[in-house]
Image (tube, rainbow, N blue to C red; front, side, top):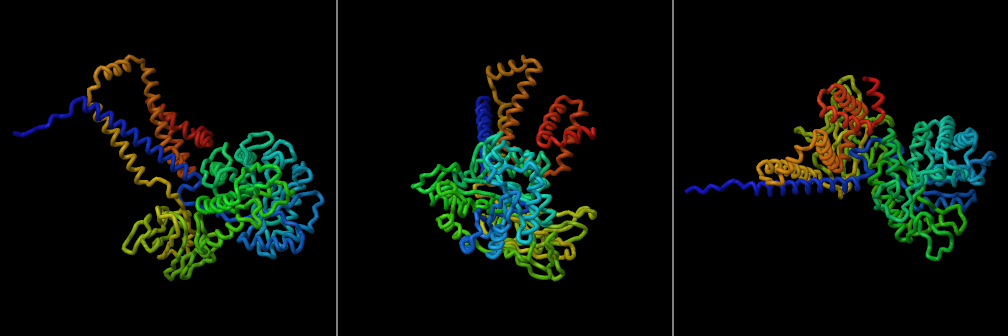
Length: 630
């Protein structure tokens, strides 16, 4: 006799529904937690493959306070070079009757040692670095400096710490006055040295909001509002480590740590200045000896061994994660300060930190490109070209007719090619570590990137994925070109990095799938369950509410769901929105506005209003554009 099992009872459906809801909540919370954790580990790391950044690529420099004292000057410079440091930042102080003899000797001595000088054109310390009332006087001096030494100098830093009253003549800081000073000096320098790159003043780390001291982000925001963006090519910060190591990834306006420049980077991106680098004007950790009797350090304190370890780890982190970081001027070789000044706690001359840095720099493999964009360049030891390639500092590499190839050695987890797409057709076959590139389609000859343009009238430069998800470390990309000559098809290479702590995409996909299945199962089970008197009471209570109260309750539930979704996917959504570009963002805003204006449905009207509000918060500039079009 057949034995048929009876269907689940209403009570079992009720239990199953509750278990499904619980599973959905757990999966959603796990997804949100992994998203928050991933955001913590990746904040400051470019989303996707890095684009070209002027002045980017972290390298070590050091702050010096050189004097024109003959053999002593030469010996100091030789010691710096022996430590593996090739770039130095030296201050030169403005005055109305500036004497050039000392500067002549210092600049020449630096050139004789083959070191790179980045001058800090600072104010006059004898009057507390008070800015001149007539900025043209400072600009004329800066122009004379550039005219005198421009053949051996590429970058000029304009002033130091103008966001602190102590470096602004003791007066309340004035971003607009500094913007005028910067604009005048930049114009004068560029007139005297057309190839000059201007570095805005290194901004001191502070949480204050005025009037005497102003945080770096507020000061830089004020410079943008003053229209000074065109007057600087590079921004500068001072990422001292204070009391935590370089592994402190907290990024907050209230937190003073090595990660603080990320705040400036994010501000620059919102201002459309993501193509500019940030330099570290001063950075490091302070380690005064146990016998110190002078004033205490205001930059935190650590011991000598810990300082050495933190300094090396910080430089390594910047090289891996921050392609937008450029020269990092460590504070300092030896300061120009009295013996009891706590700035001596930063000095590395003859101390373990210098030894640790020299060992680290000498251990770096030659011919390996780190994260960031690398222009196609036959002089780059990481790039080995074979065939009849031609090269341009503006366009990169042009393929020859001989079956050209290139071997590119890099460190990272992702790699791509920056290529030109226009009215031509070519194929670039790619392998990584001898295997077909995993982010490209394949034909019978291997993984390939097809170069063409869907519109023959278009001529664009794009960065295309070649491989992703590689183990962090050194890899080799080999590219063989087929056709495409006389088109300057290869602009360069882009190397990306994702920390190993980041959750696997498969893990997030599984959690999202579990959440969706659990929600579906909860709905299915709930419809078959008997909820008894409690369920009937709840339904009755809801139906007794007025239409307005029901709408409010529904809106509150929707807001809770939206908040949970934002915590889980908000950063990803923002990344997608940013990648839409101006045209895509404007189109999305216009579409939401169109629905808002013409829909007869109240629910669609409210939904469109909410979407339009969010889009205008993200980009307020589209508000006037939409209102003008409508």
